[in-house]
Length: 104
Image 1 (cartoon, rainbow, N blue to C red):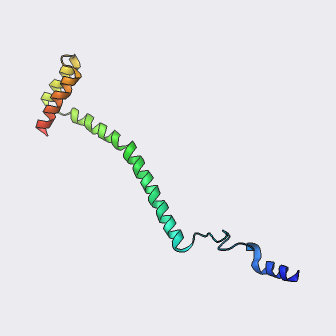
Image 2: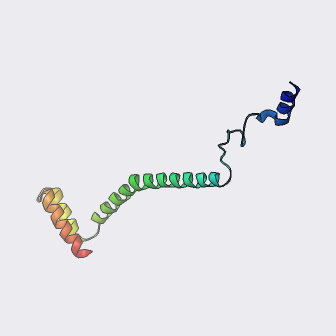
Image 3: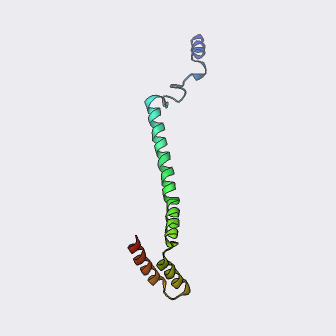
């Protein structure tokens, strides 16, 4: 009995626990550093994917809208004809593509 009490007093509150209380599965040393780096890379990849797939299409759509709002008189006339219903959408897109290819 005295031996068990002495052992418990020597071990303190961490009796039966190894490596900081996690039964031998500690996150210290190189394994912990590697785990933190992998976690940071995964987190960065998730943030990158969210930004890429959520915000970039919005920016690209805004850029296309700005391209159509140029001061080119031919494009302005084309927009006006489309707005008045003189040409259909297919004709509008075809002519706009031709005009923007020549000016680009």
